[in-house]
Each structure stands twice: as structure tokens, then as C-alpha cells.
Image (tube, rainbow, N blue to C red; front, side, top):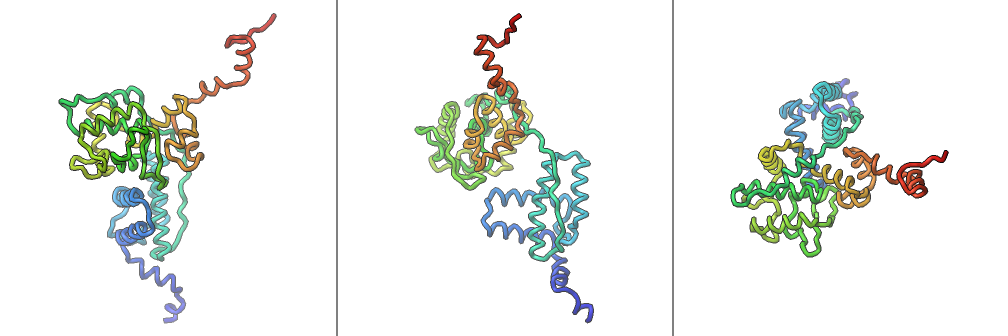
Length: 324
């Protein structure tokens, strides 16, 4: 009795909650995330993390107390040993920390420090021009499958608009303004609506696509065959099949966004216009993004070098003449 009297109430509560399973806690966590208004895409991401990442290390029926600081360190080290990319295990810890912070505040666990690993971010991958030419070759409408034609239009949209996959999946036919040549992105990561220019090439492709697929104004632009909204997993699976058909290596849906940004800058576009097209709320985000793209600015920067320009004006040639 004396021992019970001296036991801290918080410790007692944590001991009483320690029998809660990881599955129960994560279900509560998801309900909480939904109640505070997190975006649907964020909720899906958190659920995918639980299903496909966290449950690789623990069981849903394990008690929450099994997740210790030492275990987390072991998970990170094993990912490093297996050759996982830095941003992969960094993202894992960020998502795990968000869940465990919820558990700490509910006193399901004694709080401990969770450090986000420092990693050197690697250059983003892009699709080459040769790969894009294969993917952007219009299928023969008399012989191709509906799915292949839709995937061709999808790839064209991703290359021509540079949007995220979640934005793409929410675009409706009415969001394409062919007269003003603008596209409305109503579902953005920043929860803002953004209007971006509709390229001439994409305009022609979408007009034919909408007419061929007999889509109406309120319809999803890239739906499933039954007309309903497509999930990310379905989009990914469809594109994997299309890539195989085109004999191109699939390196992710959002690699198209990297490709768009890279080609935009290589073709002379500036970072401020790119910020608007990518829908970034802060130019620093665009700066970090561009720094991770496989772009060599040397030739572009050299053409603006003051010394070279002055000597060109002076001598009328690109080479300096030395008087003897």
C-alpha cells in the first residue's frame, strides 16, 4: 500500500494503458488526424505508412510499449545496412514520430526523444527525352486498349502540367478552360487553388481525349473504367503496365514532376515562374527543389559572365586578342 501511495499518478496511468495494442492506438490516431482536418491525401499516406511500413517491424496485436527508443534505432540501422536511401528512412522516422507523439500526449507511453536522421538528399530522378518520346507516342485508336489511351493522355498531362499525382486524380473536365487556355488545380498540397497555363500541345491532346472518352463537364478527367475516381495505387498500376508496353523503366509517378521542372529550367525558364507552376507557397521550397534536380547551370551561367561579355563587345569575337 505504501508503494502504491508513492507511485506517481502519471506512471500509474501509463502502466494501465500499456496493454493497449499498436493497432488500437493507430486507429485512435487516425480518428484524431481526421478530426483535426488533415487532407485526405495525408490520411491515406499515414494509413499506408502503418500498413506497409510500420507493420514490417511490429504486429498490430503487439502492445504499444514494445516500441522503444532502442528498437527505433535498430530499425533505422537495419534500413541503412540494407541500402535504403536517406530520405526513405528519414521519412519513416518523421511519420513514426508523429504517431508516437500522439501516444506520448495520451500517456500510452513514457516519452522519449526521437531524433530525425540527418541525411544528404540525393538528386531527383527524371525521365530522359528518349523515354518521353516513347511514352508520348499516340496509340493507334483503332487497335489500342482504352487503358493505354488513357495512360497516354495521363502521361501527357503530367509532362505538360508538372502537377502532383494527388492533384491529377482530382482534376475534372470542367477544370480545363480551353478558351482561356488555363487549368484549375483545386486540390493542392497547400490547400490553395491554383490556375496554370494549358500548353498548346496538351490542349489538342485533351480535346481529343475528352471527346473520344465521351467525358462530361462534371466527370473526373482520368477516372476508372466505371467513371469513379481512381486511387493512387490504381494510377500507379496502370502506368506500370503502360511503361512495360512502351518498354520504358518506371521510376515513379511523381518523377514526372521532377522531369517537368528540370526541362522547364533547361529550356530557359526561371525559378520564379517555376514556383507558380509547381504551386509552391514559398520560393525557398522551389530553391531546395531545384537544387536537387539534375541540372548543370555552368553553361547558362557562363553566358552572363561580365568579363566575357565585356571582351566580346570590345573585340567583336568570343576570344580575347593580345597585342604584341
